[in-house]
Structure formats: structure tokens, C-alpha cells
Length: 285
Image 1: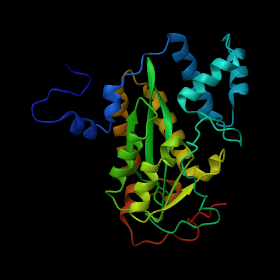
Image 2: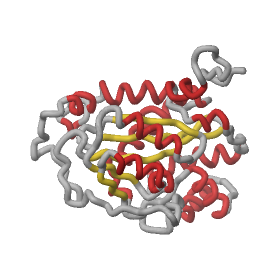
Image 3: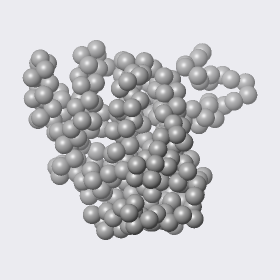
């Protein structure tokens, strides 16, 4: 039996190792989500495009946009699809990705803070990646100073495990003083916060509905969608993995950033001794 690049009965390489090498969670192999209907796939593609362009659109406005485009949909369906995709408007409102009531929340620590070098602040988030007949979720961890993507993972479920795998990979590079995330259940889980606390990392969480608290990851998602996902279009999970691997290599090692003096994220992250000039340093507000 073979699924994409994974061979569960491989005589030398275990399924767990294969998933780790492909940056996939094992649940993506064990838990295959049933394919959505053709109409839902089409609606989700439109929602993805609209949300990437207008992340302040909630379910009411998304419903209106779809109806103006000729889709006979009601708000209940749109809300359900947005929740399935992990989308929530950025203005303050009841969040669709809610922390478990038993999970501890942490304050936002970055207001007014100047990011002074690599490994000062890391942040993480999850976004929806569409396929031809479905979708998967992408988690990434970004160093704020250099904009380098330190680790990423794909999963077909919004479980905590693939976020933990992503964190473990990132921690091989080093560790930040502060780690910032939103209040999603994956990041407020005891397993995730304990992993950070065990190595002495200070935990920061966005205020609910405040997308600008995690602005660098939001910018990354726009780049990923407009520069890679939309132009290429992925048919399968394997296509998505291959395309994203190629893109993040390009993003880290070849794509110059204006805010970095047209250096690449990998160059800036590797130069640990350089202090960013006041002109380039960003003060969070």
C-alpha cells in the first residue's frame, strides 16, 4: 500500500520517520478527512481568496460577497465553512478558534518592544491551504527579526500534534526570548505551553481578534498564498508539500526583503552578531 511518498510497510524507514521527513503529522496518514462536495470546495476556494485579500471580512460580509457572485448560500453554511477552514475576521469578535476553557491564557508581551536581533521573538500561526479537491492546514514558526521561516508542518486536521512537531523542529535552531501566538486551542494547550516553559521561553499571546499583534506571520501568509499557492494550484497533499518546500527554500535563501536592506532572511538570521540599525528596527505598537 502506498499513499503519495509514504510507504507504511517500508522495511527500513518507519512510518513515523517518513512523516517527520515529509513534515507531516502522523494523523494526516491515520485520519483521512472525507472529501468535501464539489460545491463546498468551490466555496472554500472563494472564501480563501477573499479572506487573504480582506482578512477583516466576517461571515456576514463573506455571505454577501458570495451571493453577489451568484452562489445561493446562507450565512450558516458560510460560517461553518469558515470555521472548518480556521478563518475568523480580524476585528474583535467571538473567535472561531477558541482556547479550551481549562487552558491558561498569557498576556501580549510585545507592545512597544523593539525587536533587536535573531531569536529575540518567534511567532507562529496556522493557515488554510487549498487543494484541488479539499484542503490542508499549514503551521509555520517565524523569527521576527530576520523573517526566516524556522519550521513548518502540514496537517489535514487542526490538532495540536502537528504544531508541537513544528515547534520541536524550530527549537533545533536555538530558542527565542519570547514566543508569540494567537489564542487558538493548539497554542494554549498545556502540551504546547509546557514545552516552551520547560526551556525558559516567555510566552506571549495576541489579544483576541487583534491580527496586528502577529503582523509578520500575517504578511508571510499573504506572500505564500499570492506567490506560491494561487499561481501553482495543488492537486494533492504531495503537491502541496513539494511546492511549499520549494517556496520556503526560495523565501529563506533567495528572496530579498526591503526591510532587511535587501538581504535574505537566512543571511540575517545567520548573522547573530549584527544589531539592526534604528532605521530598520521595528517598534511594535
